[in-house]
Length: 142
Image (cartoon, rainbow, N blue to C red; front, side):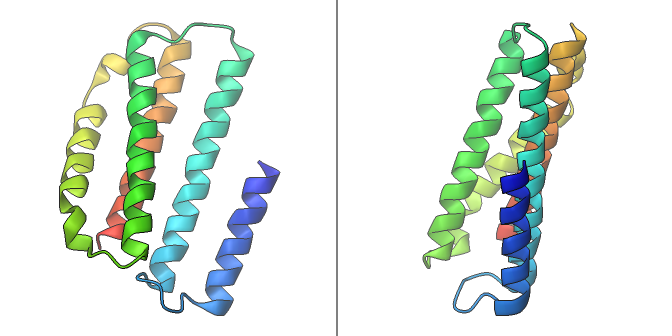
């Protein structure tokens, strides 16, 4: 957590003092992305703490949500890198639409909160993580 916070603060200071140079994104956009990514790291820390304290088994639905949340983040990072290397944002609009569709599907499902408190807590953090990844996506496609 300390390392992530130090990197987060370093990136924010660097963006504020050095700007973005030749990058495809403005300083404001990169600043927002860095803040959201730090919040993503906080979600993972809270999930790890919850799983570490309980010695319980994740439900199949919780594991599937976990897998999908990680997959969305991996795709998000790939898209960010491609756009940063000069690819057009419009080449990735399908990803944006699919991300938005998956986010809506998960946010309106109450089934994640049925069952035991442990799985519900993990699902709540994963849904927060998906929401944060959506915020990053909005920054990429703004």
